[in-house]
Image (cartoon, rainbow, N blue to C red):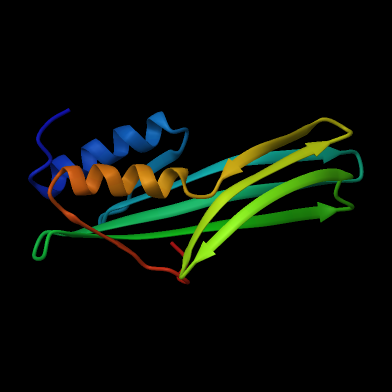
Length: 139
């Protein structure tokens, strides 16, 4: 991995790391955006999905990375019957824990709320930058 001392090196390192974690990552001119759909279930009457979205905005002036994330659940029609087991911990605006969904009709999945955020924070701090979580704001 290259020395991420510059903004472009940091973005390249983060893009590679996020891609390895299963996110679809895009550069948007201000930084990176990424998303994944870890939970999907559908049947002939409808469907349910859970999407994870994030964004990183580096600032070379103060060497800070602004990080935003959101978990968005959507459904259409009559969602399939699903068994959900969720364990969460909310400290300030940091959500951690896991959610597991299993559908009788097939599908489901697992989302770890803090996995991506922790990986980005570790990479940013290891590069000598500051990590700032902007809670309560959509990416």
